[in-house]
Length: 227
Ligand SMILES: Nc1ncnc2c1ncn2[C@@H]1O[C@H](COP(=O)(O)OP(=O)(O)OP(=O)(O)O)[C@@H](O)[C@H]1O
Figure (cartoon, rainbow, N blue to C red):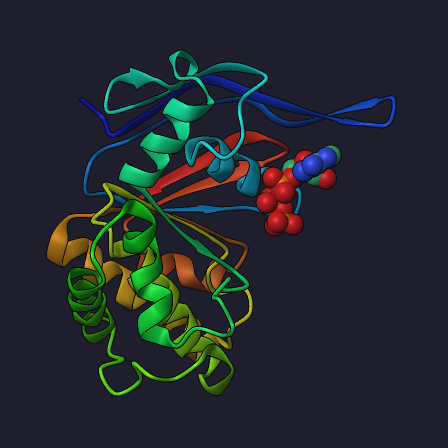
């Protein structure tokens, strides 16, 4: 059974009186353990697709299944529970809490889940070490570089052991060398622990680093490459 399957997925946004078709029928299957890049020009629907798969928005029509369960069958509470248990997010603007240090930022999803501070601290420390930040636990985001901030965000996304990590343009605010390092880090984590990653990018140079890329144009899959 695939981890994710979308069928005839459509999303329209209402913009004043106009209806903007952001996704026009996307059929996509992602197996457990895959590392998939979604790429395409600005406005092609990348964020919309990732938001739908991440359950932070709902489709206008069509279906998404996660581990065989149709998301249309969940109510809002069910969706947030599923999201908290199964999905980690990485954003282009890092979205770290500025007054918390790196360790506290990574502990946060565990504490929201109700973990005790000691256990949350231990797991967060392991994750930060895994992303190469063992010397930066006490640093606040404003004293870290962009690449280091994104590493903290990746550690935070992984700390709850999700089945899927969704990263929407994780390298958009990084220089090309740091972008390549962040993609390499995500790939290593994907290989080491089989977490499935889906990330979006408009940077074609990153694509020769990934096994599978899905190209969106005008809300449709235009091309799929598997290397
Ligand atoms: N909340 C919204 N209201 C109205 N239109 C929207 C909304 N969100 C996205 N759109 C439109 O839907 C289309 C797809 O947008 P989306 O953000 O998914 O594309 P994208 O490929 O992620 O673009 P970018 O690379 O610029 O982030 C675009 O035409 C966009 O203007």
